[in-house]
Length: 88
Image (cartoon, rainbow, N blue to C red; front, side):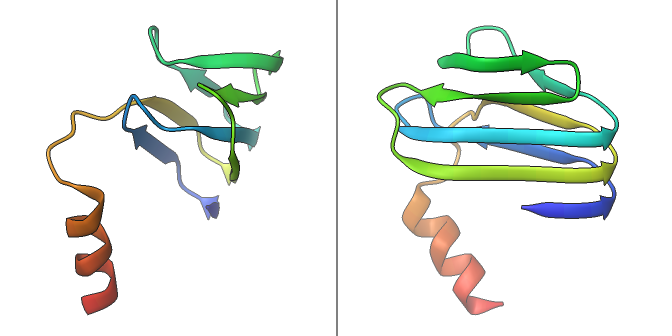
């Protein structure tokens, strides 16, 4: 995900296995407490690491805005979200 003027909020299911890279030019990157990220880099404007066992790469970048990463509430199944996105 990339944005120029705006923030990014990623809510991932707790069992997600992925690798995360998140950076903000004019803003900060915040990882919510309890999110299973093993940091390889942790700076106010850049965060990288492994979520659970690692896996596919998730890249979040913004120029003017912040980034928040945390556990989602699991309201909708991934298949439901995918169908909704395909319908757009």
